[in-house]
Structures are given as structure tokens and as C-alpha cells.
Length: 282
Image 1 (cartoon, helix red, strand yellow):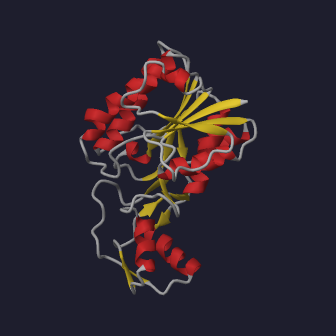
Image 2 (cartoon, rainbow, N blue to C red; image 1 turned 90 degrees about the vertical axis):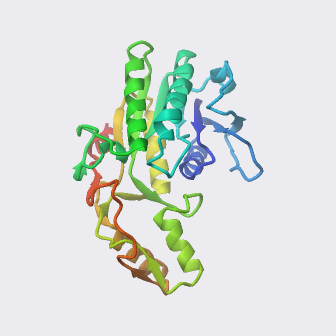
């Protein structure tokens, strides 16, 4: 039996990762939440643990049941990518929590990174690209990765840094994301959906596929380092929305050019999934 602890288990991605872990035989899940609530997902092969990672108990690793693997998704302050909170408060808190668990015996850590670590680079982005984040969130994530890699020299452990790109899904996504906005417009019966020009190219995956890939790399229990969790296929936001409309046969039309293009990301970038594909073949 492999014990897998999961932080951020009540979040958008976490709920789907929890469901994926529940589908695996031979896995015991320890789902972590800052506050336990009645609406929390059911766990069929484990238990919930209430813990604030900002103020963890001195014996946090024991409280978590001494897991073999930690999938670490918790991160406060999103989706405001420009907030200084990410490196002023979140970065030191996150590092202190992960360092404590590693020093107490944790052997394998999978941390959710972000494509924003690549900054304003365009085109297909691989893990071999130098990171050069251009917003505080990307900077804080990239800094945490580097801190953990330095920590490995003093306290050996396996580190997988899963760089997430764009995703969408039905439940729990922040209301500012394009898919919830689209579903809201459809639900209100609006004739038009306000959006940007839609020509930007991005890398999108359903959140269920993101969860599958995260669990797959976690159960490897290897020192994988940075790895893109992505489709590897660029798609325009225009085509993405038009596909949603066509698939659902919704009586709504996109209103292109209503919003300006974001200035914190390039017009065209997507992930290179070669390393992930190689990992699956091995």
C-alpha cells in the first residue's frame, strides 16, 4: 500500500486529483484541508486531515500518517498573479512547510509549478528552456523550485516539479477563468460571449487529464525534476470557445475584441511534452 498525501485537496485541481487517487487500488490517500466542511469530496481509500500549512504542527509528517509521496497543490492568493503576496508571504511559508516534512522523513514530493515560470518566451516551451518569470506568481514558484533543489543537497529526496499550463473543467474553477465565464454567459442566456480577439495560442487540457497525469508522475516516485503537464498542441482561444459552442450546440456567439489581450503573457506559447511521453514509455 502506497500512502499519498494531497494538499489543496478541496481546490479546483485537487478535487480531480483526489478522484483520480480514489480510483487506484493499492493507494491510501491522506487529503489535507485547512478547514473541513460538509461538502468536501468523499474519500473511499483514505481519510481527511485538517491542517493549516501556514501553521503546521511540529509533528506534521506524523499527523499526515508518514506518507510515501506528497502531491503539493496548495497555494494561496490566486488568481491574482501580480500580487506581491506570492513571494513576500507564500514563498517562505511553502518552503518552510515542505522542508519540515522532508526533514521529518518525506521521501518523494510532487509540486505544482506553472507555465508562467517561462515568462514571456514564445513558441514551444520545453523544460530545457531557461526560466525567466515576468509576474510575482511565476517568480515565487520558480524560486520555490530552486530552493527545494538546493535543499536536496543537504536532505536527499525525490522532487518532481509539474509545470501546469491551462486547464478547464466543470467544478471549482475560479470564476475569472474563461470556461466559468463562458458557462455563466450560456446559463444566463446571453446572445454574445465577451472575450479578447481570441488569436492567442495556448496549451489547454481538461482538468481531469491534468489530474491523471499528476497522479501518474507521482506514483513513479522518481526524482523527475521539472516536467510539463500539457497537451503539447497549440490551440487558439478563438477555436477553443468555438468548439465549446459547437459541442454544446449553444445559441451564443463570441464577441471578439471586447477585452484587450493580457500583457503578462506572450501571444503564442505551448508546452513541449517530449519528457512526459518519454517518462510514460520507460
